Image (cartoon, rainbow, N blue to C red; front, top):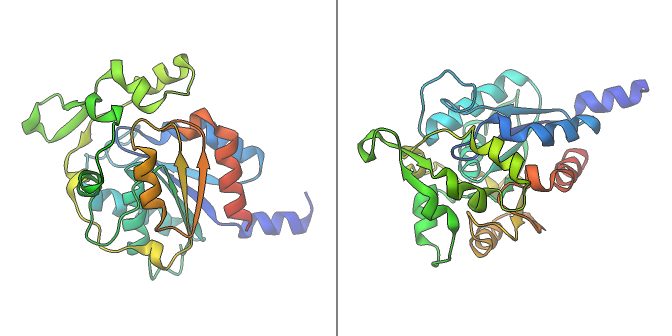
Length: 254
């Protein structure tokens, strides 16, 4: 690698990958491996209480603050990538980071994610959209402490079709085994701002998604600067890893 190539790599923004509900940083492993091969640096974040995190479960604002705290320690521009519920998190995190000089947000990438306007919540927006058949709704159950416990889990027998319909069964089985409870509060908290109005943004519609209906995705995608589509399920980082990496690479190098 030449000195010029090394300099360009150092100056590139770091890609921060923010997982969706029930998931953890583990879900980005295949995508990160692909990005590494391209020299695109990324960091997958465990939201509090998920994956390998030893922090207590939080709410949406707490999740966003955690992402902002991580970004602030990086000391370089960032591209925020949010999957599913993670879309709400990256929007709130970008709002927190709006005046940051150490971690300016260069781009927001909504990967079949909730792109929220000011005052909207993930659950509120989902409920307000026209009715569509989504398999995820039937897979959601009260957490181990029941409805009073404040968490939701997924029925493992229904999670494959809802989240990983285009993924190999053995891969989806491994993913399902890692899913963890999701706090109800994360779905009901309103966001403080709509940073996609001032920060360049891309929305990726997943056309075979059984969790967030493609029609709902297209409605949210109208808010973004650019709209792309992948003919796959709710987990393109697994089912279409190379194509997802292509999208991120183009954003980082643009």
